[in-house]
Structure formats: structure tokens, C-alpha cells
Length: 67
Image 1 (cartoon, rainbow, N blue to C red):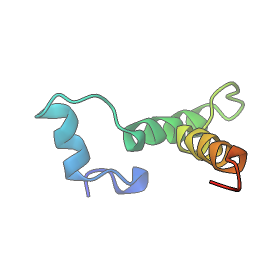
Image 2 (tube, rainbow, N blue to C red):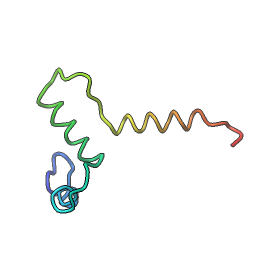
Image 3 (cartoon, rainbow, N blue to C red):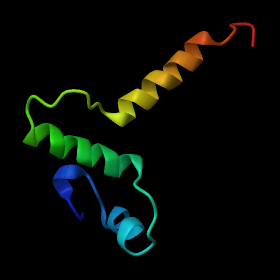
């Protein structure tokens, strides 16, 4: 584990440092966790993973039951 408290592995680190890839959902969630801990009254920021889940559930619930 690279940063165990943030659930980031060495693979997550290599994706940024070695491969130069963009941030993943795991990276964004780790940043969200750090900001939430540092700024206790931090508003206007939300967990991107939950936003994606809500969008997915919305799409699933809006589907025609006959499909």
C-alpha cells in the first residue's frame, strides 16, 4: 500500500507518476477525504463516487420495465 489510510496502492501512484495518466476515481476520493478532514465546514464538495452511483441508480430507475 502506498497510502493505506486513503486506500491508494502503488499501482495508483505509478498511474500518476510513471504513466502520467489522469486522476482516477480513487485519486479524487482520496483528495475529497483529505479536504473534508482539513476543512471541517467544507461545503460544496461531495464524494464523486456517490454522485456516479446516484446517476447510475437514476438511469436504472427510469428504464422502461418492459425492456
